[in-house]
Image 1 (cartoon, helix red, strand yellow):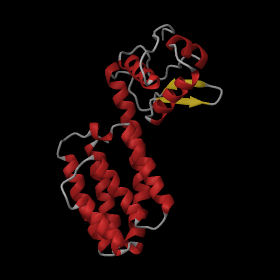
Image 2 (image 1 turned 90 degrees about the horizontal axis):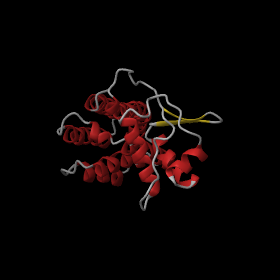
Image 3 (image 1 turned 45 degrees about the vertical axis):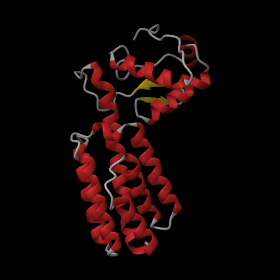
Image 4 (image 1 turned 60 degrees about the horizontal axis):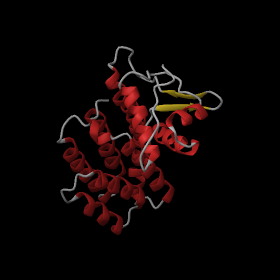
Amino acid sequence: MDQRIFEPIKGARLYESVVSQILELISRGEIPPGAQLPPERELADQLGVSRNVLREAFRVLEVRGIVHSRAGGGRTVRPDNVCAALPAEGVVLRLEQAVISDVLESRELLEVQVARLAAVRASDEHIQALRRICDGDDTSWAANVAFHTAVAAATGNFMLERLIRLQMDLLDHTHQRDHYRSPNDALRGLNEHRAIANAIAARDPDAAETTVRYHFRNTRTAVGQ
């Protein structure tokens, strides 16, 4: 990798411009998977930004699974699950897909148990909230987040709600919806939310688990996992 490929950054939200430039360089193949980025001080000088701005940019890139940091080992572009023959323009997409796969796996492990607990603990108010969210026709990402966090809220355990929201934020950063193969996938997800809500309303933990597993299996298919 040519160490002088970076250009001074201009703009109001500097860290976003840093993120955009690094992603563009990866997409053009000038920074290949597995490449180690220049040391922080050197890179900040080349980009013309403070080290604090650079660290914020790296925080975003790490959340998205594009860059990996190691204590004392600098920062590298993640090589995980990236085929050497993959065209350069597909590298960022493939890295995002790897992160989405990991998050969906962890979400299923957590949300199966969350749904079972919600089926036991949910109050009438919790059930009404779930129905309000999924009985309409809102297939937006915000409605999706609202439903899954409402299921967690129905357990009465605030930490579960926070964990679900954190995972949803990670998927938002990696643009999960942009990876859907069909425009009908969001509507399919809404219908599955209704089935989950019905299982919780019926106070049936086994049905809640079954519907959640079905939902995640279909979601993995929708994003090509």
